[in-house]
Image 1 (cartoon, rainbow, N blue to C red):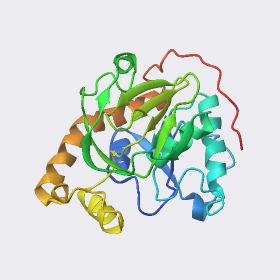
Image 2: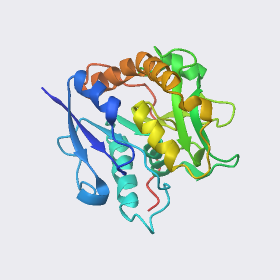
Image 3: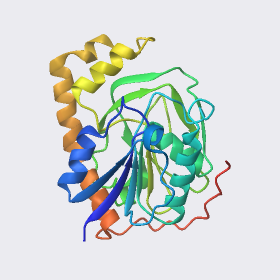
Length: 249
């Protein structure tokens, strides 16, 4: 049977790009949805897993983007049904907020550039994160932060500046504060849009971006493959069994 993944894309500036390719190469069928254009799906019937990408809006910008509340409802429902979820940057923030965590403007200002994160001890027992390198490369570009994890969530990765870089909620809901999906061209486009100039200029060198993206692919493409296996029922989920809070919207 084909593994069907619903891919939610809140913004045109953050397409699935290489992550979409990795998921497809692993055998998944991707069902794309742009909530601002298509609306939020009313049901998860026929869906084996959910991926939610990033965007320039904040997780609580419902006044300007009223569909954000619907995304939180959908992500909370996916976790409650034990469907595998992978939230990237804004997607990770929405997942945290949807399941009882808290998102705010980053206390230390925006984080941007090619950086490392560090696995926490709990990652060694996680079906997706166990095989990652100890300090994998990622792309950072966020002005908000997940400052409190959902109740019962497991912290999987941190960095000195932002503690909550990756987490798992329930058995198979994964939130990432960072990006793994980009191409060098996308990073350059973000840097051009960034009025704060948060990206270090030397990190925008073409050779540097090519090398970092090669390192990201080496570390994170296998995780995307494991996510498809998790959605297909070929990989056992984590053993956590925690009560999930109701969505507060």
